[in-house]
Amino acid sequence: MAKYGEGDKRWIVEDRPDGANVHNWHWSETDCLPWSKTFFTKSLSNLTILDGEAKLHIKTKKVEKVDGEAYVNVRKGKIIPGYEISVNLSWEGEAKDGEGKTLLKVDGNVEIPYISDENADEDPEVKVTVKDEGPIGKTLKEAMLTKGKPLVLEKVRDYVKTMAKGGPAKDELEAKKLAPKNSNSSCNSAGVSKEKVVVEKEVKKEAKKEGKKGFKTITMSEKFNCRAKDMYEILMDENRWKGFTQSNARISKDVGGQFSIFDGSVTGSNLELQEGKLIVQRWRFGSWPDGIDSTVRLVFDEPEPGVTIIKLTHTDVPEEDRYGNATVVENTERGWRDLIFNKIRAVFGFGI
Image (cartoon, rainbow, N blue to C red):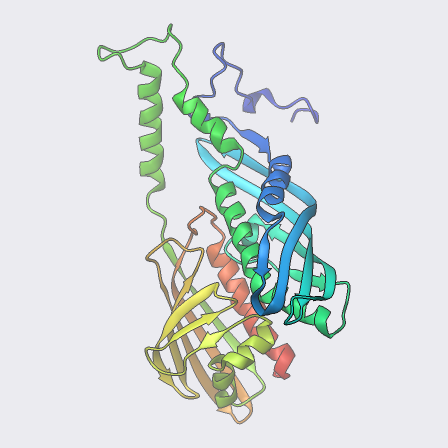
């Protein structure tokens, strides 16, 4: 093993005379934190949230801070983003009366404490605070949460999508693809560089080897200290969903009806419902590739009064999201356990 900082020549690809990193075969890394700061500064500064609706005027002021780390690695032509950052921005609001006179002006703060590639298929937490906690100040804060939070999350999703495509490294990769070949490169009879032919063959071989990404099934068995009908009602009641998830939810209680949970991050429909016994639903996360749905099956068993066992089978969960992140199955399983089942135990006192 080489000493720290020297590297191990067995793993180092020597620089070519023409400076080319053919097929991006060896590892390259781009620091994306400065670019990330610029991205959020441009997308979140001076953003109009409300312009007179309900006599309220709200807009973001500027991005105060972007901390953490962000990078893009490229290996064998594959883009591998990595980031763990926090974003802090200021906002201002003004409430007016019916005659257009100012009732109150406030300043506030929006904090996104954790944006991570590991949770790219989930919207991050967004905290909104205001310096004046009086009645009008609270009204402006609630308006910022209701109208401003979705806009902020939209910009975060744009960032996640852009990073998955290479972030600041994307232009560099495109430039390398379009760069003219060295005039000394040998060509075949059709005038095509032999080097290009080799690279294209490697690309095809790699694609053939990797094949199409598949799907997984998640199974869980969870026990609760409650009646089966109580658990069924909690999972089918939008107000209780809002309570234990602290997010918006719309849930139909009819077969064929639609639902939307976790602020719209998950949507779907009811396929089969048996009160206190069975819930079968079509589930889809907004970050999944277009046209992909999964099926959730929750079976309720009450072996004795006051004890309920839920058996979850979540089929057709894609291994990757639309951005190429391969943590979908892991994040979905963690979401069921930590954001749904454990939250229900904690909030409703159903723990064992």
